[in-house]
Image (cartoon, rainbow, N blue to C red; front, side, top):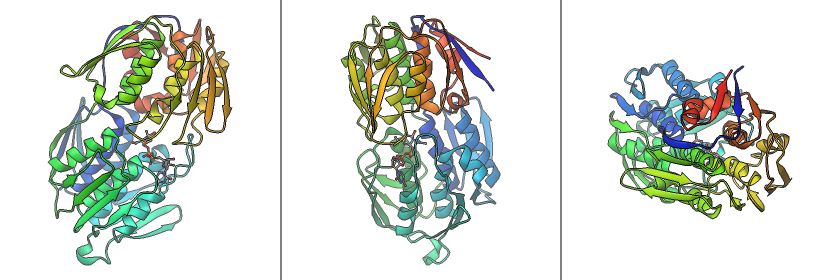
Length: 422
Ligand code: UD1
């Protein structure tokens, strides 16, 4: 199994280009199932989760051509309406085929995801929302078996549905399903994440009638058919945020290209509170982070967008570990998202956990050690810690990183880090 070996202590400087967002690409790849003609995407990052989604769609009969960051998907001859346990257990986001399959073909069989490293993560709201649109859904043998064959014209029926928790993929699944439903669907308490907006923009190009994406009420008037379109995936705000924290922690100066500051308000504010200088060019889509490496502790509380993203919590934990002062880091989205804490303690971090809050006391230095990556963003936080630790940090199980960070070692090394994969 691959490992990363990081020699800490290098200051990062230079430019890094941010890739297309994984969490926008995944639902948009699945949206190809809704269209009768090919969907052409660009800025699709080379990531394990993208490969998994493409494999899943290929298994269903979608014809796929991939060339560098461009992917074309032709779902004119879909033969299978199933996502097996094997696929869903490798990647929970496979659940995103449920809405599109059901809306276009009237039938879907998708494995229940089960638990994962960061919490129980149920998909009950995806299911309830589809039931509210009239779908018949049975859970048998670990699978969600869904059908619209009893409905008029076999089409899902528009509805008003309130999600009692803000769910990103839930909102996406229901928005895709509603795009081909009969009549009007109103999704209340919808997720406002930029990836939801990017999906909506792509669906609109495909012929969908959607308003309100980016607010907490999304209205969708179903259409009979959707067609292919050309779409460029929005930049990855979490990848951007990770490099911004790396620049700040190492006392460097890094310019991010293809980075949209308007998607990163909460993260930028916290970096400035920590003492980093953040310069934004909205015209060029660049963000420059500069710091002398002397950072102040910042309290973090995760919540749905536009508040501070849970996917940046671990990285800011790493920042706080070497900052001056004491910070409270509160995780409100996932119940078990502190897996990085024990690993950071192996590097010398002073963190104590009480329920969903971690109390982080900054230490003067970390010492390299062998640590284990447990999930995607936890892994990223260990890379950040390794970049400032004294000596060598070895990170095991880095397949998690390959799920979500494109060319991670190459990008960090181009900025002056010393990261090797073995
Ligand atoms: C998405 C992102 C993930 C991010 C998360 C929160 C993708 C592919 N993944 O995950 O990177 O960390 O948003 O920003 O976009 N919940 C339920 N029932 C449901 C659905 C969710 O109880 O039916 C709960 C979850 O367990 C969690 C909370 O709602 O506690 C939010 O989860 P959700 O927004 O659905 O996360 P994902 O869409 O899985």
